[in-house]
Amino acid sequence: MSPDKKQRIMKAAEQLFHTRRFHETTLDEIAKAADVGKGTIYLYFTDKEDLIFQAAVEGFDKMCLQLQENAAQGEAFRERLLRTCENISIFFRARRPLFRIILSEGDRDMENGSGGLQRRWRERRKNMSDAVAAILSRGMAAGEIRTDVPTGILAEYLLGMLRTRSWELEDWPEAQRSVAGVVDLFLNGAGSRAPERKPAKET
Image (cartoon, rainbow, N blue to C red; front, top):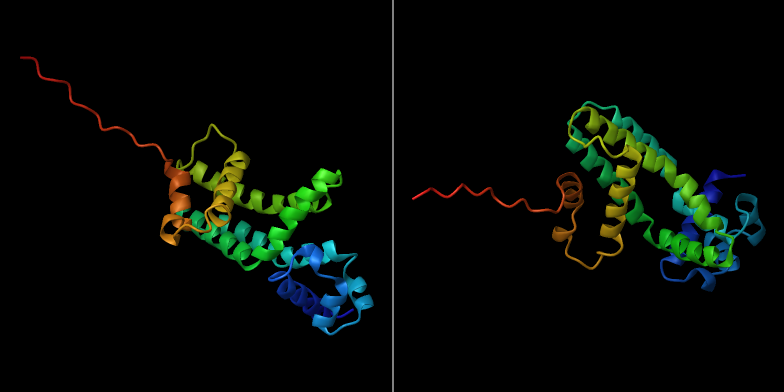
């Protein structure tokens, strides 16, 4: 089997899914776009869902490994966390159409009782969550992160904020949903502390 041919198939599928819905695109069309026979696709992927999943998560494990390496570097915690969130955002932005399919098809799978794509993604996603938690544990050790909430939970909150930024707020101006703004909101909260009032002087 040829790695180059597998890459060509995944690239062809990704390009088609930029403009077509999952159920509107056939393996025959993907094979034609990749200039391979339909049978060749089955040498690398079990079905169309597997093709989509592998194309979406290509490079994901490498990114997670880099995030883990970032956790061990000596730069200031906030800068490290910001760089981590930027790397995550860049990765998912490049694969946005594919992950949109995974999430939508995953919801349909859950309704049908199978949950295949959703389950596969949750299992793979744990590597990213663990890497973010490792960085947060460094911040906790440095006294910059609260210690009463497990880092795994904090990591999920942060990743949820990044997803909201990318999906629910996609039509908002970038200045109002920047990655730096997400990190600042995560670390400092949204509450506004009222200024302390000086006691009134007795007359």
